[in-house]
Length: 267
Image 1: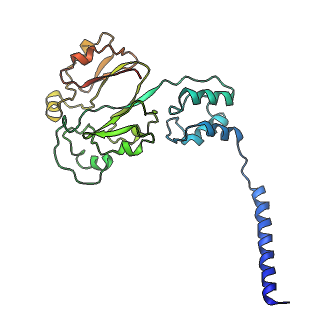
Image 2: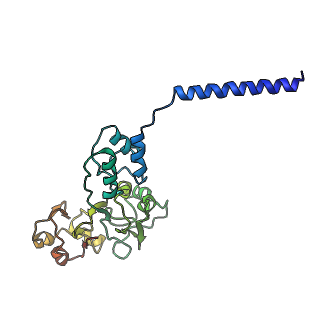
Image 3: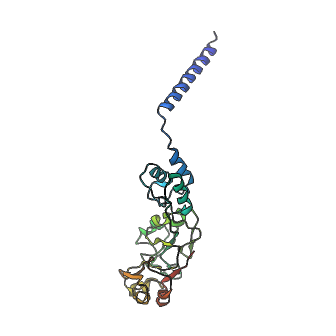
């Protein structure tokens, strides 16, 4: 018999045996598919943001299917629509999800905030923060280098005149910008009702804050006195609004001498 033909037969035989062995092993070592978890993951938005408290959408789906949680309302990006679909699959009551939006608690743009140096390093807030807190005189404020912009999967954030601004109509409250901001000045606020927000996280004394930013909170407590609902308190020289108590009346906005307080209107 031709030696070439023998070699071909041997190689073909080895291929057939290897294929059969792989097929057998794939059956033996196959990981069972959790069909309920797969169905749940299919209806989740796929942002893998971790806002639910689990390792992305697959982690949340597995936790629901495995009985680790029965809360159908942990997916903020999916909202009440996804909560209802999860409830239908799991046979549970749908949890209500309050609409939220991210908000940058800083108006320290290039017109308002003073700079202490010229920064020419890597265009990253995280990197710039390591150099004396960044180029702006206020070490608490937005550096405007766009880490949050790059992180947002919904294109809801833009840098406007040196400071980040969130578009609440595009924001899905996934918290990725909240987690990536090295200054910790991005938080979620409700969209279901109007509320005031002190757009400043500066904790310096008023005299120093005035030198750093023209719209910074100087801790004068005028907003505290002006609020008829007791929704504002002081935290280390900075005013803070309790959104659960705030009715959006705007009295604090009118009373603020520096314009540090903004009114976030209902979506």
